[in-house]
Image (cartoon, rainbow over all chains, first blue to last red; front, side, top):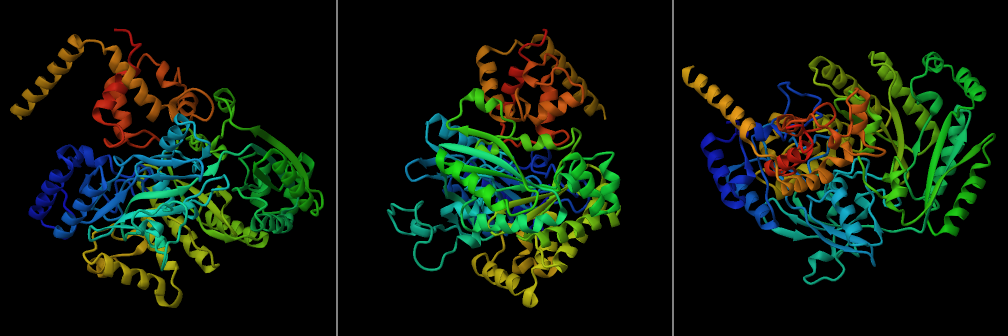
Length: 523
Length: 115
């Protein structure tokens, strides 16, 4: 039997027995076959000695059971790694960061506690998936939209806590959080915001409550187990209009982003864009690839002009009353018209609600608030998974060109071929570049991939760019780059960690934050 | 070794017995399986646009690529894929798809197999 580090087999057996008393024998998983189900299917260290295999898993069905498990873990110094739906693939899936941890699997806590379509919010347990919430809203004929991220099998609670993003005007998921219930590392239940007021009628309507606002310290965090969360939803819009802005020179990106930033900051545009360069980063092309490799911007631009392939394309989605979105699109075209040669292409437009037949004709329903798994269709048919390097980049054309050049250069220098780089505006006022890496069940390929990944982290940090989120394998690497004033931020996190979780039982090592008893060994 | 050998023989005979005498799944079990399949499998393996499992199987020449239309799947194959994953399909834990739900999925996906 695998045991948590520093825990005796006898103590672990006693803890497991006590877990069984709390949740029932059926929901404590200790056999190799059952524990294997918690391995990260997209692990970049699959079958290597670094792969963090858990010792067991325990699946509570309510907040009282979570409290009891945490108290037992404290008594026996058992490290717990919390997952909600466990589908955080690309970032660690359902596996812990520290091998030998016990996975605290919250999937059974899957109740939609409330959806309000007058004030547009939901109160959810962590095991609810985007698919579950969407079905609940459809079944109850409620006039609200959710904002799914690309794969819909994740948890709104978990994705918001990991600060994920979607595509509709509610795309910044942590920004849409309103009120949490948290089991603290001592087993006590706390409610944040207005939830701290007994009988509060505005827990999901006013975020801040009274006094210091603490929601942030429970995101990407190991300071508590969130057992309920309020999220704001989007009222079903009347209409959707889409269109693409296309420009033809590489340096047209600079005015393009300037106009885009103004549209975002003014609230004229409220969704997420996927800013693409069909010329520079488009699909493999026998004629184009040699030009891309040569690095000649002039040659690329001439090719693009000849074949009518834009250097940059910016697809925009607008949601709201029919007349308003039509006027927004006209305004947006007027603003971008200052760029020489700019062209516009009208995209699909819809009136809501869509019928099932209408929805069935749309490949990517995610920007319409309908969860799906279609993003996996973009992977090669024999893909074994992926992870993403995802640095936050300034919202300027100059910075984007520099970042894309630097990252592509690293890929080439280390013999990794052309990078697959996607530019997203998932968060206000900045871009995030997603550099997707394939993971395989091949030790040597994964070792090479990790070398490239770590080099990218260093290059990005040297330019002032840091990742917004990462796979558990690289959490220490990313944490090391956020080092201002001799790691003042991490030392502050450690101070809080030691104060609220003195036994260091919750998610040790998450985001590079280790409890005191493990710090010397792991830092 | 002898004991292990006896165990293997016993297991093999039980499997054969199971294959020989197992009653076809009842309608209720198939209906339960359809519901579990719709929830957990359809978003990837269903019909229509944006179903990556179906597209991946089609790209690899599997016919029909929609799992619910197959007549050659077996319960052990289905268990293998759900519990161990394949390519970009991850594993599914027992808190997601219980053993009983997995049996129901198998009943649904093998409902049209020739006996």
